[in-house]
Image 1 (cartoon, rainbow, N blue to C red):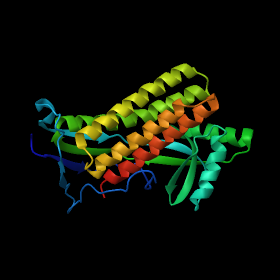
Image 2 (cartoon, rainbow, N blue to C red; image 1 turned 45 degrees about the vertical axis):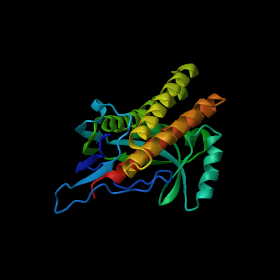
Image 3 (cartoon, rainbow, N blue to C red; image 1 turned 30 degrees about the vertical axis):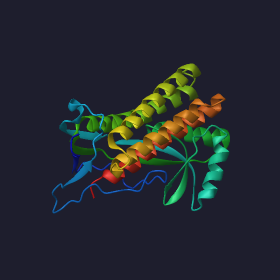
Image 4 (tube, rainbow, N blue to C red; image 1 turned 120 degrees about the vertical axis):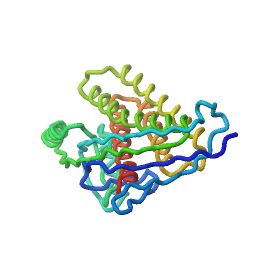
Length: 273
């Protein structure tokens, strides 16, 4: 059996797109992967225990540049509270009306209805909520900066970690498309359910792969990815268990918001300080 491999992460400063920090209560506590000394990028070595099932080709050492892409979303906020219980009560009342109603925390507890790729789309729905339902919503921008890392470790581990970043980044876009397709009646329920099932199977398989490759003592940076994959899988499973179209739309929006806020919180743990 090979000895423990070494994962090294070198961070590069990139342009910040965010003006604030987003913290999601369900994500594991933030950690700092390195410290900047005198303006130079530092490198922190992380010991990783290899899986005994790795083949020689999978266990060889490799170095890659990995990027967690930046992205901005425009969420409709239904309310903000100092008390979590009040936020969850409001979320529950709106969830029954088809809103995603995710409760997240940045200072106060925010109740989010849905997220859109452009401010114009968010404003359109905001106006509809006001004129047709008498609901006032605030547009809150969720901005995630691009993070680039130079990672050295075992081939299979690097591949799985890269796949996790790609899968989660694609999931927020796919869920957005499915949500709009359902709301605008441009996609049938059968097609949406099929897409959700495929996404769930992919997320589940990747989560199991990471568990097998990194084990129970994985570095917190990897544990956070596994946690977000697990939450996404649960959200997708809940959507697949929906009864009505209204419930399906609500759960898709919830899962999308979960991925968006989760990736933003995760990006903050990797951002240069």
